[in-house]
Amino acid sequence: RKEVEQDPGPFNVPEGATVAFNCTYSNSASQSFFWYRQDCRKEPKLLMSVYSSGNEDGRFTAQLNRASQYISLLIRDSKLSDSATYLCVVIPFSGGYNKLIFGAGTRLAVHP
Amino acid sequence: ETGVTQSPTHLIKTRGQQVTLRCSSQSGHNTVSWYQQALGQGPQFIFQYYREEENGRGNFPPRFSGLQFPNYSSELNVNALELDDSALYLCASSLDPANNEQYFGPGTRLTVT
Image (tube, each protein chain N blue to C red):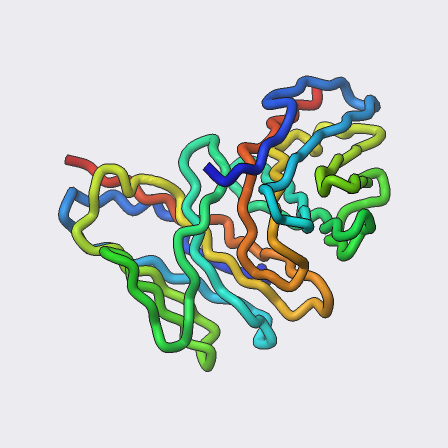
């Protein structure tokens, strides 16, 4: 079983739609959680951190459910510029260093 | 932009050869991590360098090695290249090993033929 699993998509949505991505992780001792965004042939860029209390940044809302080992990302009012691959990232407790464990990513395509 | 730079941008090597990739961390960041991203996959952790020493390592063979210099820049060396080493190699810097936020450079795309 992969440490971080995501639905690869693609999710094809019209502009203005609301879309949700899910991610599950296997290591219950994981300590930190993030969503990164990666455009085609570019580097991953930090989108937002994920907390149990949930956090919101404009049109983006992220949520963590530790009991179910489940992370979500909600994008409201999708824009063409949101088209990208969204990577779920988990940091397990490693004792002295932090390594990012990435999912394979979920591809989003927003069309006019 | 993150301020993390990598060179070269692209590289083509032959199986069995050796390659060195370079990374300059963001100003103020003393920790550098390296990741390998194969096509269609998420990045995989290779190792992390802090205070010029390897601070943690993923599931990569010893032919993957690295260095960190006093100015916190870093090199990734891969010996005896294999076809499966073809990938995007990403460097990420962070304030220190305990800091969770890592910022990536643009990557080096390595093709092994």
